[in-house]
Image (cartoon, rainbow, N blue to C red; front, side):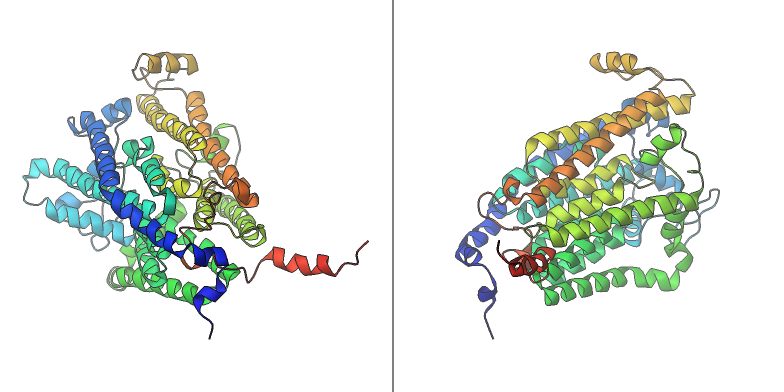
Length: 479
């Protein structure tokens, strides 16, 4: 039986000691990265305080752009009344149970238990503050895990995530950082060649939010191209096992509550931030039909996913794992009927790993900042039933460091929506360019292959469209 080193290119074997030092570097940088992340999270908490001081009154939160779901959902989802997610039905709305996956609902319930010693009048704010503290810890975990998976560029990659305006502005809008942190830990475990452990954390991430399920596609494709069948099997087993461990008890004893997330997602119509919202405003008809909307969104994603699969197998060099994970997530988000402001957190670690270059990253972050303020000021005009400021009025207010009185018009909101959509699309196009031209990939310019790839790092191709084409060209007679 041949040793594992015999399957690796000589460069990978020769740099084995470098790989060990790469994994040790994030540990030395951990205090710096953790401190910077904690500081940014503290600033994010302070950014929400003008709204917390008025109990997150909706008019104030849209004016000051400091909205959060955490505080109102403590009351709206019955946590203040002692209702247990999935087991106790809700009344007075079309949502009958907590509409989040099981691990997120469990997170909400755990915090609700923690704040019971507080007085009735103070429990809502305590629920928000305790949740914010735990989400800040999860942000630190996500940054450290991302830095760990980055290899030699651990400091740059970690700081790109930790110092991003998106983290500061959106960390506490919802519970998304739970899935973000678990996904980052899964990628770090995979980079350490622990596929079963990576699968377990990925299964937990899927139990907290749906989107990490998409990462199985790139993992399976790259494992197939590299012939890493055993690692792929252990990954899938770990994912399925962890997901079932969390979900099965609720499925057995509270089926109606468990499926609420899936039925709610299926029935949901066009929401803020979606490209379909823009198209609907431009006069495109038929988007109020939920079945047609689901077909358009799912169909577009499947077409894009098929293109990514071809890219994974036909690229001149096997794409790096974060590159494909980023692309498949973008393919899911661009045609989605819902694109909330905090979804930027999903992309953040993967964008830093896929393309650790600042110029395009900064432009993308600017697009996210524009949309972040745009959505709240547009909701301000909607709630106040005012026409909102036009573009010149909005720019004048912003230059005066103030919010536009009465919010912004729908045309200005459309500009903010497209700013985010196009900057994400442009960043994805640059990642595709790096895949097709590996020499332009900054991660590979110093001789590295795939620091986050784990068993894929330095592995030879077994299945690739480029390998199938070469024999035919070789067999052609010379001229």
